[in-house]
Length: 390
Image (cartoon, rainbow, N blue to C red; front, side, top):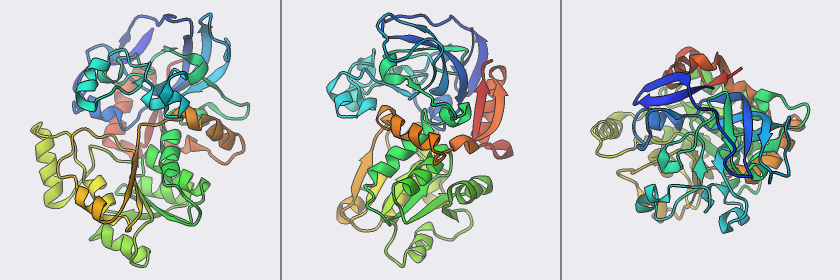
C-alpha cells in the first residue's frame, strides 16, 4: 500500500510499504477514508521528540471503513464507517476502567522507552514515535486498529466524513480541556492557540457552559475562525503590548477563571524570554519554547484552573511559584478520546458540533509532504491539511 512516512528530521516521503495484517484476534483493518495533520506531529518532524525511525508511517487522526475483522471483534463489522481516537486502549485495565484511556497499561509494547523518563508508560498511539509504542500511523491506505471494540466508534448517518475526522483527536482533546476546567456555568475561559485543538477547546467551553471565551493567537485567519466559527472574543498577541494587561482589562482586573494552553513546545515567543527559549531549543539544551504556557500561568486568576493540552518535554524556567502562591489547580493529560466519543458523536449528530471548518486544505496522500509543509509554515491560511488516500 502507499503511505506517508518519516525519513529523517524534516524529511517526509510517500512510498510503498507493507500492508497491515491482523495480529491479534481483537484487531480490525481499516481502509482509511480521511486523515489529517496535527500540530503535535511537528514536534517529531522537527526532531524535538526522538525515537522515530526511517520508514515509520505517521499520522494519528483518522476515520475510515472496516474491511477486515479479527475473530474476537464483536462490536464492529466489515463495512462499518468508524472514527478512531488517537490513543490505543485495551478497555480492561485499571486506567481504562477509570476513563483514563491514554494511560492504558496494556497497549505500549515498548515501555522501557518511557519508564526512565515518566516512571510509568502511557498507552500507545498511532504513528507517533517508538517512545509511544511504534505503531504504524494513519497516513496510509490502510491501518491496523488494535482493541477495535474499544477504539472504533460507528459514525451516525448524517455525520459527514470530515465532521467525524476531527472527532478522532482535535475535538476530544479540546473537549477534555474544557471538561478539566470544571465549569459550573458563566466562567471566563481563555485559550492560548487557535489551531485545531484550541478552536475545539473554545467550542467545547461553550458547550459546557462558559459565559465568555477568549482565543489568543497571532494569525488573522485563525483569529477569524475563532470569532466566526466558534463565537469567541479574540486577542492578537502580536498587536497588543501585553496579553496579561489585555486580559485584565477584559475581565475587570480579575483575570480568566480558566486558562487552557493548546500550543505546546513550539510556541512563538517574543522578547528576551522568547529568544532565550529559541536558542536553548536549537542547541538541544532543552526541548520546549514554553512562552504560551508561562503566559497562561501568569494570566490565570487567583484560585483559577490551568489546563495544559499542548505537548511538552523538558521545560526550562517553569514558574511553579506562581501556581503555588496563587492557589491554582493544574489539569493535564493526553486525550482520553474513548471517554468523550459518544458525547461528541451525539453533539455532531444534533448539529451542535461541526469541526469540519478546520479542513482548510485537501490533498491526495501522494502530496502528503506538501500538505505538511503548508501546515507547518501556515501557508495560504492552512489550519489543517486533510489527506484522501483513495
